[in-house]
Image (cartoon, rainbow, N blue to C red; front, top):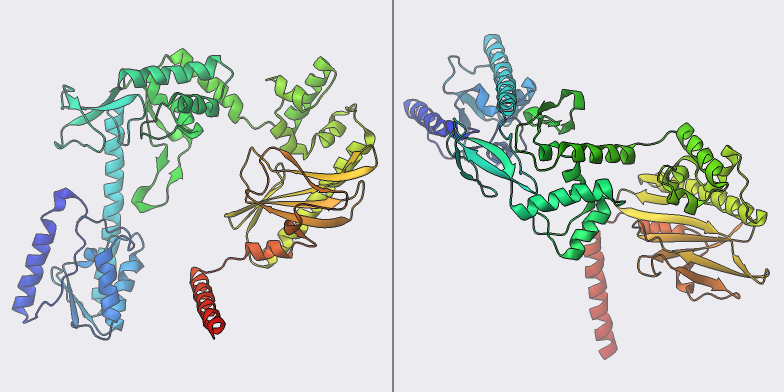
Amino acid sequence: MSTDHQQCSPVFQRQAIAEYASAHNIRIVQDYEDAGISGLTLRDRPALIRLLVDVESPTRKFTTVLVYDVSRWGRFQDVDEAAFYEYSCRRAGVKVIYVAEPFENDGTPATCVMKALKRAMAGEFSREISRKVFLGHCVSVQRGYHSGGPPGYGLQRILVDANRVVRRPLAPYEYKSIQTDRVILKPGPDHEVALVKKMFEWYSTRGTNAAGIARRLNDFGICNGAGGHWLARNILQILRNEKYIGTNVYSRTSSKLDAAWEQVPETEWLRVPNAFEPVVDRRLFAAVQKKLSRVRHVPTRDEIVAGLRKVIAKTGTMNQATLRRYASAPSVESVMREFGSLNEAYKVVGYTPNLNPERSENRCVERRMERLSADITIEALERQGHRVAYAKHTDTLCVDGTLRLQLVVRSPWLINDHLPYWVARWPDCFAIDFLIYGRIERTSTTLLDFYLFPRGSLKPGAYTVIYRNGTSQFETFRRDNLKALFELSDIVPLQAIGRAFADSKIRGESGGLDGQR
């Protein structure tokens, strides 16, 4: 069974199986029952999995499996799946008998056709139920009822009867017990409602973002709905949700018949305006959505170039500080993502910066060497079977989705135009596990050595001198090549670590005994 409405189903099945066993002198030695579990997939059927394992066991104590009917294997969408599990039993020498079917499971062509038809009907039954449930939810949403899920910060669930007469508020994890009752949303506690309104006001009228709002709330000691710290994504979920203006939105995601969750196109969403009492004003909500759309918009190359030229025409100059000063200008991040560096963007828009030509050339050499080193490193890691993702605007490599590295190549700074020294900076705006720092001479394309700095070895955001006057206080991290990086990237099974630890412990004990001798 899969729902409470089918709670008597196992009783009927057990009774029918017992009657069949008694009539045919069969002794029942083991029951396998999946109660309250859907039969759409095998992974959620512990009893069926246990049966299939026991069937293959040489010490099993049964020779026959009694099944109520063909659909009890499961209502799989692939009709061959149920047939495979029955075949697994027969292959192991276990006979399968359907006690409630009008045919004998004797392997004749007519029986095979009947079983295939029954399996197809079982799968179609699940599809039909899924369609009916979805349509029922749509009707409920159109009538202004809550479709399920947590209400959200600043809102609460209210239980109403069939005539929309309020019964009482529902606590978290509390659900209706009468089938004809329904749930609606209403504004929650006054302090939560006031805070939600402040979030919308701060975002729309002040120059702040979601991360800034979350930081402000945490500084005030205000917890989120779960009693934890506010995160930027929590704020964005509130600012984007239409239920705060009373609109009921349904079917934004879909996972029918236990399939993977997928995003539904916005044109197919079910929207019901004025379904609930609003928390914020519609004009304020619209202003926030307009600002959010500008933030989410990814500018094209032509839009970035046009924006840079407007900045140059207005200010006569262009650098990171200028781009960050004007809200209408392209962001530094979008320029770096599109062109790789500001210097390349200067060339495209025809702007000549007022910089030392040697410094600009050094930076271009550094960028070329960084890209070349990244290509070689990625190729070597992929040959070893690793998956590597490279983000060029941050120079970071993500190995196997777990190890995050930043690869930089730097030429020296000069004291009095002739005393070179190299400095490194650990990033403070994104997280990495290792900083790979390559040294080159000025305008040179020859790598001198590498430094592999682990997290915690350098202060984030600060410039640290790592090499000066022929010496370095970070000699421990210096390497002639990146062989150590490939060793760091190796994935070692946990069992191997356990064996290595045990071996080292044994060697340590032996050493102690030798020392005593």
